Image (cartoon, rainbow over all chains, first blue to last red; front, side, top):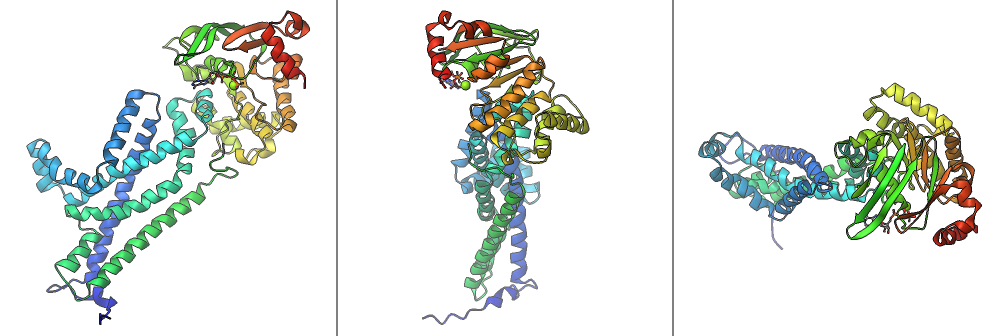
Length: 248
Length: 244
Ligand SMILES: Nc1ncnc2c1ncn2[C@@H]1O[C@H](COP(=O)(O)OP(=O)(O)OP(=O)(O)O)[C@@H](O)[C@H]1O
Ligand SMILES: [Mg+2]
């Protein structure tokens, strides 16, 4: 058996040749991870709802564009999408905009990650929302329209509130995924949690790398678990009295 | 009030409605019956433009449904509709179910809509349930709420699509009672139903449909009075549903 000396306190040591501590790097990384994931989630929810809704509209043209979006964004690996936004897009736009993106845009890695992860997750959210709308009894839309509500009002007040409730369980897993997927942002220089872990275990080797990796893993578990709890809380809060989900 | 003129409708190659023509005058109660799949629901949904049709026209209170410039939400807000499966909004309380369209479509204030809603709940005997959710009511109670919800819009005509056929037998009468009362107050009604007792009691006219055609369209007395002069198909249909 190995004689490995476990030392969990390694993260409280000084980063070699600096007055910073490893745990500070991890906390800063966690902060960026949360910021990237939560901001991307806002984009994903809003855009995903719009696109998922659009796919159920009677207008074939609008529905077709929405379908194209979903197919495009969920069939390209996330890491490839981030590379395209980060390295390819600046070369394809007019030079002055491209230069701004490369040189002057604040936190380019973070911002690109938020947008890239948001657009990617939006396609997945859209599919959930679409499924949720289609799972509702067909008569609900007619009931809204028959009262004189416009199609938009029917979606806003009748269909979407129920569709959201129906899809909270699958949305929960998307919400958990977005934190885990945010680790890919390290590949475009976003200094989030996984980036910091690579940094610590790679360039600034403390003696005990295994502890650092384990701790980071535990932090991800904690974050995903919290995300799950938050969604469960929301699910309970918006539960409809007397409604049997999946009924009819 | 409602004038249906030579309406034909297809689903792809399948013709659901063939050259349907009839009229519902103000204060009329018209019962529509016919075998399953004969196009009754489709016809009634054409009246408030929930289903488009390819030929003919329907004029509701002077407004053409087929005219592309017609404001459909506006005309629908004046035509009440009650569905087989109630279609209350499950996430809203009974009072919110009644108030939603009053506020969003008619622009009534919250108070106004609430007062109107409660008065109608009282009328259908459900005031005590105002703060419940639809899932907490029985089928018969939900259908009475659905009728109240339609009435809250002050409709000029009410459409019913088999309002009692999803109900347990013991709940059918509580809904029919509300409908009879409405009919007796002079509400214009077009009802798809196989409740011939209801038809006998309050209908002015009975329409019989088969395979997308309006086969019979006559006064109630004539329809029930002289079965021998009814068409073969209507007699066959009636013999089946009148046995019980
Ligand atoms: N969306 C649709 N697409 C294709 N065919 C349809 C559609 N809706 C209804 N139909 C067909 O149109 C015909 C008439 O349907 P409709 O619902 O109007 O009949 P109905 O007289 O109301 O029957 P029921 O007593 O069963 O309610 C049926 O043959 C049905 O299968
Ligand atoms: Mg029907």
